[in-house]
Length: 161
Image (tube, rainbow, N blue to C red; front, top):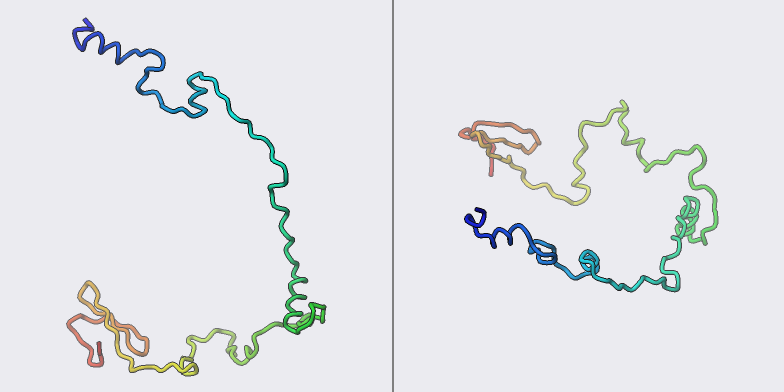
């Protein structure tokens, strides 16, 4: 009865196969595949090589004292000799002029003055910047930094593009 459905030869070829004839078996001829299939394998052993192939230990990092001596020697033109402490014990370090810039109340100022003029930067004629929004309104950024939102059909008198 089994041969009536697909034929006995088809049934046997789909369900049974001889060793080494499996079409779904992995193919290959490398060392591991030869071992899996039961063939003899001959591989060359890895032999030690002469000499030290690893680099030596890294140079130790300089201490802060070494760095300071080198910096003092470079700045003062000396050979790195210890010339004494630049900052006396208990002294404070600062950038200079900080006492003049500190607010008397101990709080930070709300805004910094525009220092562009000191560096030769010229301010052009500032105009209001218009940014259209998706809901029909326009966000306006005024030259003084203030921001407002108006209806898109409304145009401010001082607005320039």
